[in-house]
Image (cartoon, rainbow, N blue to C red; front, side, top):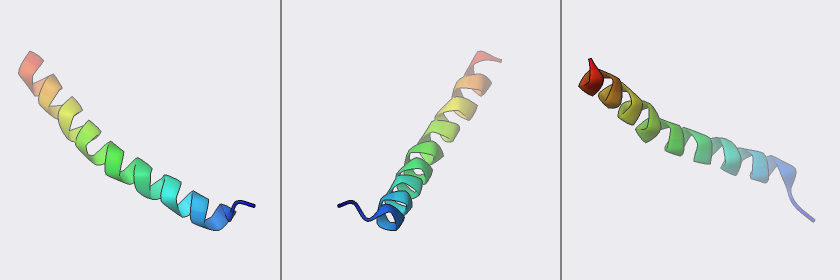
Length: 34
């Protein structure tokens, strides 16, 4: 049985951790193209 609240917290934490570098990379990539 999966504990959904813990699963949701881990998922949101993973999204935040992954989206941070992704946003920085996208901003750097856009500035590099301009």
